[in-house]
Image (cartoon, rainbow, N blue to C red; front, side, top):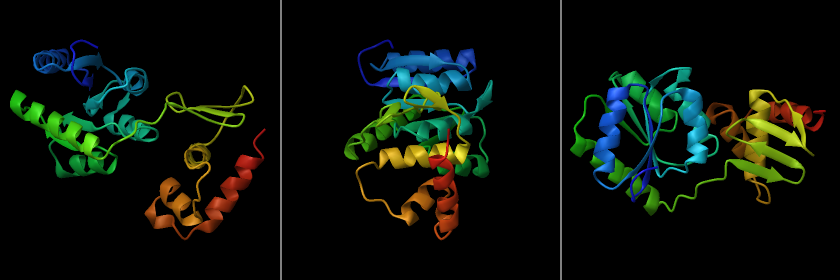
Length: 209
């Protein structure tokens, strides 16, 4: 990161746009880190500890929406999508995926800086606590950036739903959480009455080798 102010992670594959963002942000005191593809974006969200992420949707080796969903599995860091995609459905998909704001290219420096300030202010007002990229409970260790689960040092392979259920339960360890809450967080609001889903996957988790 360069600069002295809040940390901004720029996820953008277009070199010219990256330079524009770096120059504009650095000139106003922000510290800037850059990555150009989807896998590096997920990793940098954990290692760079940014205060704000500027995320392009069209990325090599993956889509920005997928990156956003991966980050939202473990982090509440503000994410501003910056994209040439101006369709309403793209904006809705990004916001539903966990984005805090959506900025359509091209945009001015003033608008960019205003959106970043708003995102930082909202995060501060909400007293957002950034969660650790590694979760541990007893002998279970989950690296949420790499999606790696180990029990007593031995790697365990989980399906996407098993993984999401495990992470959700670890985050709520020591707290009371209802079946409805689990179903909503893991499967979504439309499945809050599907208690059999929970029984099946809890049984599968218990019997993992």
